[in-house]
Image (cartoon, rainbow, N blue to C red; front, top):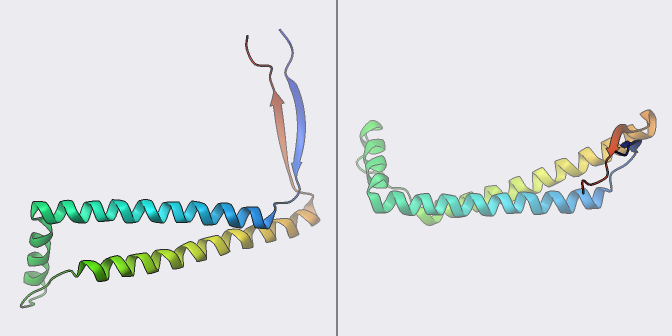
Length: 121
């Protein structure tokens, strides 16, 4: 049996553009998943009568004559807030990559110990 090869690697810098693109795609994917799941839950709640029950409970609790959710406005607001969060999250990740690159110039980066093994036959 062959001995595993051990090595030491150092992460000295991150490419900021790559971090930005990956973050943007990740956050946009999460937003799409959230919007689709929320829409499906909204439709199910509407079909089962749960949405009407919630609206009646809110109207009764807050002593309103009537209370109704406006679906298109909720969807528009959710998409707009989600897009803002995508931009903020992407910007924060890019900023962290820049800060890491600056700090790694001083401290030399992060050491990673790697153990390479041959695949089993």
